[in-house]
Image (cartoon, rainbow, N blue to C red; front, top):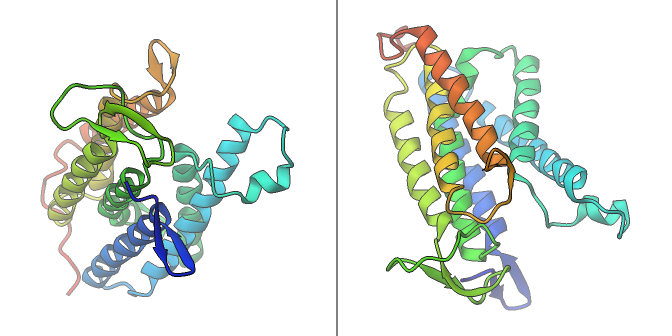
Length: 252
């Protein structure tokens, strides 16, 4: 585990580093795709910035709504670095990007397909940060050969557990590669629909190994959201009836 990098008088959080790298990598992928589509490449920086700010705000608000108990000042809880919630970040980031797209006149299926591979890539890189920091995203106890303890993690455990961040990095990294390879082979909207299915299935399955509490029908909050993502993505793909059919030609 390596929660911090000590560079002389400066200490850097490895989760924060991976968070930043994830946004940079996603932005670079979006920039390349924008160039292929004949759109301004600089839009990639605007999208990444909007997603980052909206995601941080959404994650913080979700945490405060669900966890704030009044024991500390609301102001200090607003600006602490702890308690960034996944679904709040997704909703906040998505809302900010949609507002940006409306401002730029790029609100449509093309925007969703543009973001699909980079969303998967950012997720994969972000989970590297979870693994390095040992922030409690690991799973239940296991006796499998690759089980790990997190004695130096932010949330310590001496018990060997499923390294679920590693599972998620591998799964979403492969999803990002698949979505990127299919970017010119699918009808508008189908790529994002496929992302919803892949991301939903990945999170649904990994939650069975994690330590989150059940909220309904033996499923966690993340699993319920994942089921909704899978259902929406599958319905979307079925409506398109042949998402792999020939798309419109790429602009020269």
